Image (cartoon, rainbow, N blue to C red; front, side):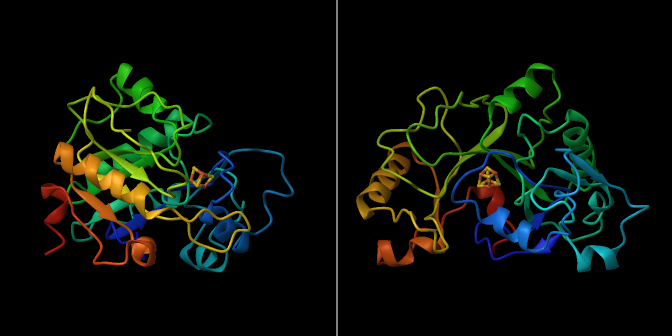
Length: 255
Ligand code: SF4
């Protein structure tokens, strides 16, 4: 579990890393490739498992992503947070844990270890919320007050099946905001939280959101009484103090 610069959570925890979505603006891919051991180049495999027997803290420090951005299960990280003080923890900031390629066994293991450390709030985020629905249909998605399931949206053409099961906590992450989203909050069920941010880095085709796109999202949230959290990447565009609200339950560690 690592302290993080991501301002809407306290820590990140990455028992699974790597992703095959191929988003052009991905920051995680750059980091993983920079600290890669080249393992992805000498194997055509698309999934890797790093076992505690073969991977030590020392080797992790030397090479945290031996297979670059290929999906990798760092099994040795599963219990690293068990005795830590309760935090809002973003699970798999360096992956999409719910990508269609991720073996269900990996997801179940992550859930199992989350349940062993109930002092934390676990924030999941995916671009494939259909996987939440599949898991829920099989009664495998944990229903607990400290599990928060997020969906990542960047543009209107992201055609998602919304995950709107009311018994689960769910939130939206609009990051990076690549266009104005209009009235995009589904009528069927409202998210309990919205996060919004701009693309960072220096990509050639980097998109800088317009202030009115953000205003429109804020007014959607106000209409439905949904807390909204603006990431610091919006500071210049917004030009006034950022609105950084949390749902009541996630606020407990923020005071
Ligand atoms: S879903 Fe996230 S981790 Fe995967 S490629 Fe896109 S930005 Fe990167």
